[in-house]
Image (cartoon, one colour):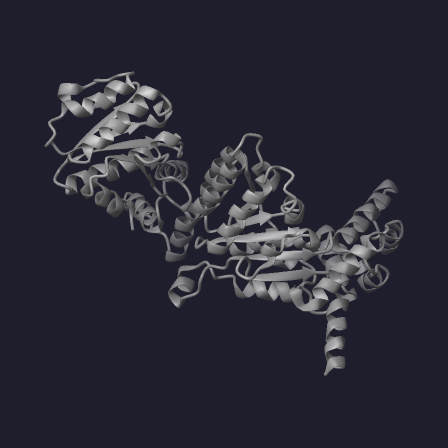
Length: 507
């Protein structure tokens, strides 16, 4: 049900006090005025603390700087006169006993009168004694159709048109912004070069970054990595490529649901975080990085409130990729209860949202220690798939060396013996391979020459890979993956061959 339909229903049902949470005053007031007109042409009276009542010549400026008088003004209107009183920022006065008592008294009287009070506020902040009096409504951000109409209106004043694909990209990029922000950023684009262009999508994304920075919970992360920047992990890359168009309108018409998310479990430095960035870049979606530690606040109820705010922002900016790095560390103590149950409540809110969400927020979580994760997190329905990312095989190490060296020395790539490098670095992760190349560059730079294959091998000989220092932990992870609880990200890894060998033996 749309806001307009629900609001008109509450007017007809004579709900006395309606609380609307929104940052878009102008847009919601226009919707309220439209609904009031369709419901018997009701009068609409607007009040704020600075200017008092506006729009009525006989009461212009009444109840200025006096919220109690603003409520008393409702009783001055004849009981049979249909009206809607819109009170801006009124949530700030609800803790006052005189305001609270007056609202409850008015709520009794207005049940039998064609009058309604509408309190506008940016957030839901209601005292306990008014919880039974107020009816809360949320005024959602503009949907795709409303955004498209606004862009079409601006294009009508321009001599240039946009292709359907570019228009779809622009509409999708604008989702999650208020109509005022959309108008502002599009006006900026038109002021820059006199028309709207496809490249103006970047301006829209910058406006989204501003929105996210203001939350101080999520971080808008620049994603420039490509799928081709990932060495190996062929099964995972195939899975991602098949879902490249899953957020499009054509996918909805086909009947496909929005992809839910992906859990990447495995050894540190094997490309899990790189994959999260590459997903967002390949799918042309904004990447939001969540630091779960920022969800936890010192005040009672603050952590739960921040979690709900994070969910609201992510859904408002959908379609998007929500990246949660090392989620195992964030919720490791969920079952210990040493913080009064705060972690458990935050975790419960989060996984419930993951299971029930219908919004196109694709959650990518990475974890190094699967034993630290609560079992509920791994239940089917939270994620579309759980992939295990293990140590690269020799063939995959060749790919990783090729990716790094082609980026650093594209003109000189053939001078490196990549086969030898891959052979001489068993048990090295992708991060350790990159570090060996960086160290080799230091060697070459310090001697005023380019680095060589021998420099890389010398640097690699000084590195003790994690596979040796954390051998027991890695063994447990591999045994967990071999038990069939996760899908293998690599097609040609040593672990894949071990599993295939076991299956042939069983056969």
